[in-house]
Length: 153
Image 1: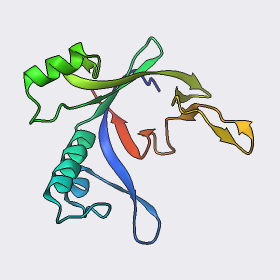
Image 2 (image 1 turned 90 degrees about the horizontal axis):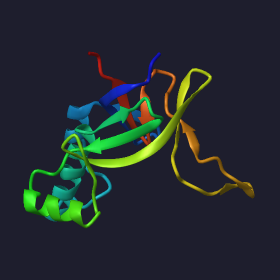
Image 3 (image 1 turned 120 degrees about the horizontal axis):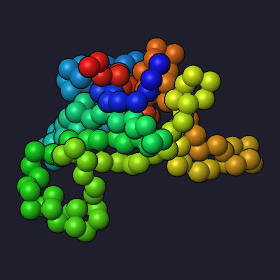
């Protein structure tokens, strides 16, 4: 399988009441309860909805040069002047009209895409590997708990 190309949002995983990871499509995720925030706090709800919309509108671009980019939509309430100021200040990078996270390095190992998370740490007193397998058993590119499906052309 060629990993080069655009991978679009498929689903997001969340832990349910029985501590099981379940995946929700965009509609389910956008309509699901906001268990981690006070739903009576309008600002917190607005921020959560904004974040969820960015997640379901996101995609990953895997490039031939060994780089991978996570792209998220610019929130609707952000004006062009504010975007331009943030770009000039180096606070954000744009790619394809979206906020660009990355690049991350990627490579193919034993037929699977692996990417460098950049997250450093230790496990059992040993330096942990910063690389993670990005392809799950169902063939989705998984980034944290978000799954992306290869866009068909």
